[in-house]
Image (cartoon, rainbow, N blue to C red):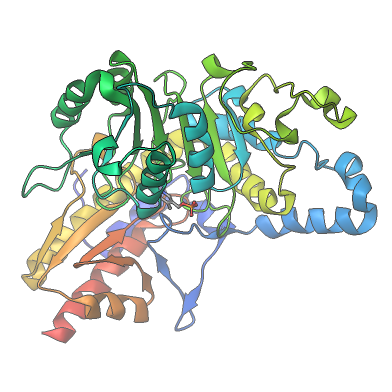
Length: 426
Ligand SMILES: *Cc1c(COP(=O)(O)O)cnc(C)c1O
């Protein structure tokens, strides 16, 4: 398609956009009494308008039924979390039995490492990406120390080549082969939070299994953003937070994937709690742990139903729309944003360097843009003028036009505000 950097053209794309009506199902903050241009759906997704109803239903059931709500609420609380498994399974490419929702992301990765990081003999190393999201770095280091190893010996970081912005697949596969039978676990962010790069999860999982390691993925920036086929890729485990592309609300619960080959095992290393026991006799309070036959065996506590309510509300929208339609719009809107950036770059004679791969297979919704010669003041100008982006040192802005609620007109308007911001400084 030949793009044009005009309001007419952007509006034409919006008219043709099948998801355009979904914009109205979300609540936009306002700046200068105008709805913002929201680029931070990769950090905290907007609130779906149906979320409050889902929460209020629980408040009402709690008021009217109190403890009886566990069994007699319209959506009973004791198995409330099970309602999320099926829609989530579609989003991450899993069987519903392989998905469960509990705790928060970092907690879940720790819990999953109890099962999947079992260093022994010479096999004790973890391969992760360099400059991983800080929580992942802290988590991996503390796990390694917990098992009595020195992070300097036990952690192998995948590196970008000098002067390059992306990880190369051939370098990743080579490192995996080199670490070989010393590798206990590969744990990487499926989409890199900084440059927006999508890793080849299928190939990396296969390479990890070839050397006898477990392979897990942190899907914080991937779930609800890119196409995932966790079951078919044979991924051992994965976890994601729900408040980024999945619009479930701040700090909300995390989803987990555990491949079915690990289900139904009583002797697997795992931290256990009563919500992981077979639900048929959970309330018999027996001393013996009988695991649920699926990913729910990793559950510990009864579910935080008030938190799961807005997550379920949001998943209803995902059910309606489907990942395929979201991804189709995502590809178009990100390509249009990229085009607008290049056009503005020419007009203002600046130098934006997009450090996200230009190849559609290797990126999702996010474009990370290096603003050479521009400072934090430009970011602040954007915020003041109703463009919500996120700033990372030294001078990268991350732009993630979530296909659920961002419009092509937003992309055009953003270009104009960006141009003003640069010109007003010059
Ligand atoms: C957002 C994000 C997290 C956040 O973890 P919480 O436990 O939900 O605070 C962790 N890892 C990655 C890669 C992230 O992008």
